[in-house]
Amino acid sequence: MKITATRTRLFKEGENLEAFIVRHYPRLCEGNILVVTSKIAALAEGRTAFAKNKKEKEKIIRAESEWAMPAAHAWLTIKDGTVMVAAGIDESNADGKLILLPKDSFSAAARLRATLRKCYRLNNLGVLITDSRTPPLRAGVMGMALGYAGFRGVKDCRGSADLFGKKLRVTKVDIADSLAAAAVLLMGEGAERRPLAVIKDAPVEFTKRTKRRELVVDVRDDVYMPLFKKINSKRYRAKRR
Image (cartoon, one colour):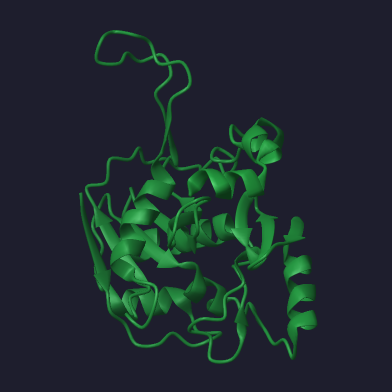
């Protein structure tokens, strides 16, 4: 698998995203996956806002969230079935504005794929829209898939055998987030100006229809939920010392 991130000029709010992509990639090949940051996908949709103060920003966060809770350092929220900080609203590289997430990242990826397939005359083309997340109990951010189209985001290994012939009962591989993490590592988080990348020879299964809920786990079934319900924060901090 090979990933190439492309340095571009600054993308402007309201600009045509398809034309921007074609300008930087005159040609894509069969089996490529095009990676697009959520920031320029959101700017193409005009998904920005202004907040005069903290209270106005909190109101926007609540409006963009399915669930929201204030925490010590930021608002913890659930949006589109994913836990994220402040509903994904970003102030970095925003020139004084708040940049929201795309209205519907899966639909945005599907529209982009349909247009680009015709433009490049391709059968198998994937589109992946990414953002950055902070995993629980880990320092730093990593790439994550917000929406995608043209390939399966999960590989189901249940029923296959491990090295010793034992059948796997619960194992699934999160393909979409794995690709996003690898691509975002090259695309950067600051002033790199690399909002586009192409993944070649990715180990994916291309498909015409994407199951947008295949990565989502109901909060009641999440494997970590019992842990966070029972954690005593003071005892945990003392134990770590």
